[in-house]
Amino acid sequence: MKDYKLTKQAFKTLTHLAKDNPKIASSIKAVIMKLREGLVEGESLKGYAAFKKIRTGKYRVIYTLRDNVLLVAIIEKRETVYATFEHLFKKSSMFDN
Image (tube, rainbow, N blue to C red; front, side, top):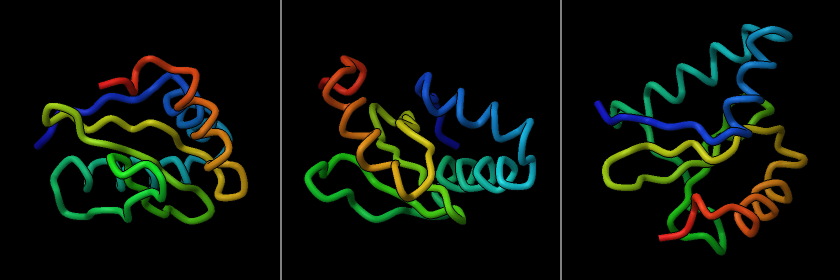
């Protein structure tokens, strides 16, 4: 099982969902655990080959693997996830190689 790390945005979103909609939060946590165990794999993200996306209902989880650590970059609704990801990607040094 891989170690994992959530970005500040992903942690904040998951925390809010746990309070407001525990069923969705539970579903997202289950997907993260499956990713850690290697049971599922998402699709590559266009323009960002190192990142993958996986669907969880109306939400998308964008992640990457760095040194055998699962980095969950963003968790957000489908309508806004890609714009938010691009913004975070450009502003954060966490995604630098």
